[in-house]
Image (cartoon, rainbow over all chains, first blue to last red; front, side, top):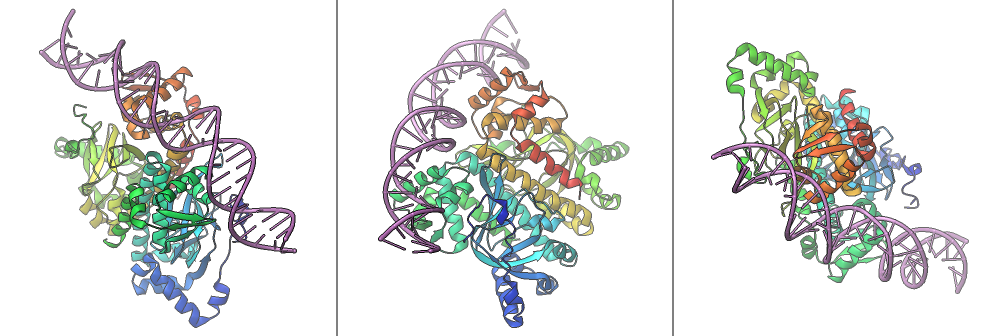
Length: 265
Length: 265
DNA sequence: GCGCGTACGTTCGATATCCTACGGAACCAT
DNA sequence: ATGGTTCCGTAGGATATCGAACGTACGCGC
């Protein structure tokens, strides 16, 4: 919250592990981990027997707003299983522009590349909406995967589905205008936060939509004029969800459906 | 070649299996499959023992220009391992526009979703440059994967790396102009065809770049004026590769590097 | 050689977006 | 309250792209 110098890599370590207090409170920690496990769709989908194998390596983790979990120049350190909050997967170009390629909430995992033996990712992992979850060190995860085939499959499957979502985003970025994309993003974020009130600035919306701030303000104004959203300093509020869905491009529904694929095997 | 009604789903079955002649020529078939196997980077990377388990299910397959291997409305039927040629992964929107999200050549596999138990893909798989390769039925592949862990890992890893490439494409589509993207596409295609002469029309370039034909013609003209490319009816020729790389956006190099990740474990 | 379908060259107006800039409002720390 | 910082509203010119249209050139089949 206090560190807002977003583009600087100085804030990229962001080791806000809250396990200090939680880990040393045996009962609390277990209850916490179990709750967070259930809220994360991937961890909740695997058998109890497999979960027990990875559980000792899971740390409780609090996602701080605007902190960076990974930079492309780094090696992947952890895989994160959010139970709440929202993490943006951003691509940054040489000239400093950025755009979001994907989004991870409680339905997924951040750093899925580590599940297939890779320790790099060209994507910046930025916390857009704070929350909490569990994380596991990359080497611990990799060494456990052989004995947790269901987890391995769930992770691989998520990687494929995430690729589909990224592909739809690639098309969306090319073919749909800013107002449509803004509406899509607000819906996707709202789904993950489970709230109609989003704490985000136009500036950050510009970095995720791959445009500049005035363009976001104009698009937001257009939605406001239609009484679809309301926004004040750092907060966007959804007034009429139905209308917002109508204002968004088809990509919202398409991407939303992909999540269903994960459950239906 | 003769069927050019591209957007129509009538040509989507495209069962141009040439295995009839090849399969019934025992020696020739084996030699053919072995050659094609070696040229495909995924099949060549797995142990001989695992290859022998899937080999009986592999069919020789010839990719016909402009044929469609898969439509989003269908279920995945086969996974294709190209040894040559180029397949575009296209996203189509409701209003009929299309744009390429990814590209598969001998380094990869088409239909990787089938490797994680899924039988859908929202991407149209379109043959851009003809070639040949091997294919395997989805159910045969899935039933063999448990006993071929190296293949499973190679496929999962490819899925992740392909996701990275798609993410970079998503950014490229948003942040780079048409001339840069055209240059990038020509380079990527040239790498896979291993030739400086590409048999493709401006119209198809427009569908892959997500724009219209006149915009492609203008961009091509700009490259031609700088003596970087030459183009006549249905053919684009790269005259100066160095200059073409300079004219392309960084995304070419970035995506190219991802392929290296596959080999380096 | 002729006709026809396909592909390319080019134009122009409309639109979306970018880029830069400035001012005002909200929030925070003191 | 006050000063500083962050965030939003807005404007105007520059640019890229779109969309539609028309003409031309190539190549194939007859």
